[in-house]
Every structure is written in C-alpha cells, then in structure tokens.
Image 1 (cartoon, rainbow, N blue to C red):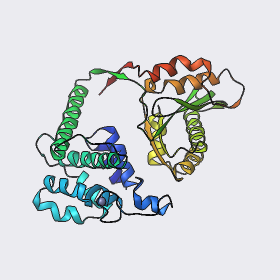
Image 2: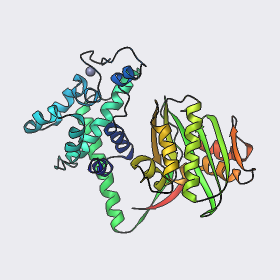
Image 3: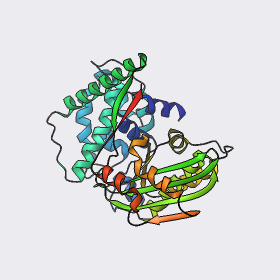
Image 4: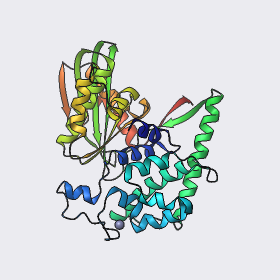
Length: 337
Ligand SMILES: [Zn+2]
C-alpha cells in the first residue's frame, strides 16, 4: 500500500482529485452497496443504470455511464486488462502509466476521469444537471489543464521564484460540513491552546470551541484540536466532514498513520477512533490564511481558564475574521514552488 499511496500523492492532478483517489483506495467512498451494508439503504443496486450492484468499480468503471467514456479513452490494446482488473490493481496500474497522451499523461487523464465520473454521478443522484456536451473532450481538456499548471509550477520552482497566491477559506460543498482546527503554543513545549469551528455550506457558524491545554508540545496541541473538532462534529451528527488543519505534519499522521512507538501515537489513535466511524471525513491541510477563525479561537483560548469551552454562537473576539471568511475575502501568500 505504501507504493499505492506514493502513486496517489504524486499523480499530476489537482489536490482534491488526489484526496478523492486516496478515498477510493481506502474504499471509503459512499456507494449504494456501502449504504446497504451500513443499513442506510435497502438496496445496493445502481440508481443510474439499475443494471447491477453499485460497487466502487461499478461507479468508476463498469456502469454504462462510465463504460462509454472509457471505451473512447482507453487505447484498444489495453482494454481487456483495463476492464478486468480488480479495484486496487486497476487504480495502481493506471496511476503508474505515464504514456504521453497529447499534452498530458495517461495517469493524469485516468485520475481526472475518476474524479469527474464521481462528481457527475453525485450531481445526477442529487438532481443537479451536468452542462457538458462531450464528456470525453471535457476530461481531456481538464487533464491538459492540470498538466500545464503542474509544468508551470515546476519551472517556477526551478528558478526559485515565489509566486503570489490569494488564499481564502472556502466553504464546503453542499451536503458537507467543514471543521477547521488549530493548535497554538508559546514555546515547544510551552503554554498551549487549541480551537476549532464547524461551518456549513453557506459559511454559517454551527459551533466552535476553544481549549486551554496548559503546557504541551506544538504538534500535540494541533492534535488535541483535531480530536475535539472530530468529537464536536460527531456529536452534531455530521455525516460528511471536511477537516482542515494548517499543519502538514498532523495531516500526514492522520492520513498515513504513525508508528506505535511514537510519543504522539496515543492521540493519533484517539483521532482514528473517530475517523473509522460511520461517516465520511476528509482530512486536508490548508495554509494558515485559510484557517484564520480556528487560529483566532486558539489565540482566544490563552485568555481563558484551563479547560474546554464550547460555543454555540461565535465569541465576539473572532467576529471580524468570521465575517471575512463568509465574504470569501482572501490574503496574499508567497509560495515557493
Ligand atoms: Zn450503474
């Protein structure tokens, strides 16, 4: 699986596409078969074609909705193995093929097709109309776009330039909720706090917290933030959660795991306890500029007594940044790469 994750995280595609692939290889995307298994639905049949069980492979490859697209993209000599492989080797093999396809590689168009295939299906199920006429052309254009963007970044990286990017908090897609958390410490170890905020698809405040921890290390403070964030979202009965943290290390622990002998493994395991429950959670890292409300809540916690404070309405100290986020205002950041 290590080699699989390498391919998933290195494929030339937008970050959200990689996150989706990561969910696919964890077999964590919510199909009808999965809903039936969890007793959330009484049928596992595909609601698009009604011609079979809606497994992950059905959704992404075998349903007539995707089959027709694949037959136009996959070169004839590869079709047989393409349509016969089981899920994990199918993903692994295709992400490993870097054949030049005309401005993009096979792995890129494959990744983009999985992501868009899934997106189209969700739109279909939720009654939203797709507007694109030629889906194959559309996928090729997206693949070319992703490759061009990647190439540009690579060239800039070689010159050591910094590029200015506007970073903003982005509300979750409809049907999802977003939890932003942060940990702060004055010294490592030192006095430490954490904070988090749960918001809906319109950027509306659902709940938040501030935690004054006392003395601990910086990554532990981040992880306490994650733990209480997950706990709070779970107690609110959120079904689909995007968890954003501005620490690459912490997101790495949550996505890739942590060695049992690591001093932080106890809290990572506590977080896993939530991640493995019956809901969908996507963990991603964001720039600090996109995590400002959580940052402010963590700062605010320094002024509170030790312990956990839950807010059903936003505390006055953070109202400015909260409004900023809701309005979609961004901050410039210079990123090397
Ligand atoms: Zn189907």
